[in-house]
Image (cartoon, rainbow, N blue to C red; front, top):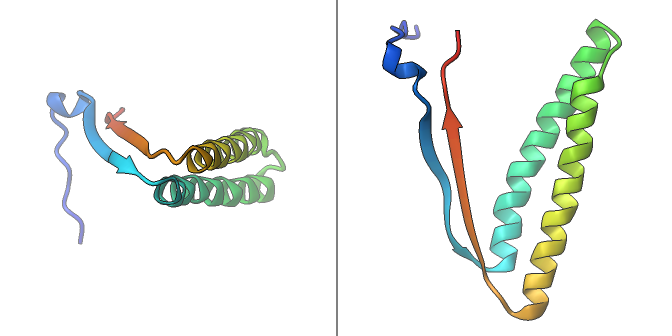
Amino acid sequence: MGKNLTYHHSMHTPQSYQLIDGTFTPEQARGILGAMVKSKIDFHALERQSQAERSGKTNHSEERLQALRTLDADLKSLCEKAQAAGAKLNVQGKIEITLED
């Protein structure tokens, strides 16, 4: 059984977490970032399918899927450029979470 959450005023304050923090080879960066983007693509693909089955509408998930595919291609290109230049990539990724009523 899950615990009941007691909502306190302070819980409405954004909570920040450092999800990624480091310098990586282009291959490592591509693996980490690619996995995150793929996870989001998979999520929105399922959402799109679910929306289509429920209402026939897929606008939000379809738009998000297109944006994520563009992001994935951009990240791949950036990693390829870094690889060609013999450079590493410093990746900083913060996630911020706020409880909403």
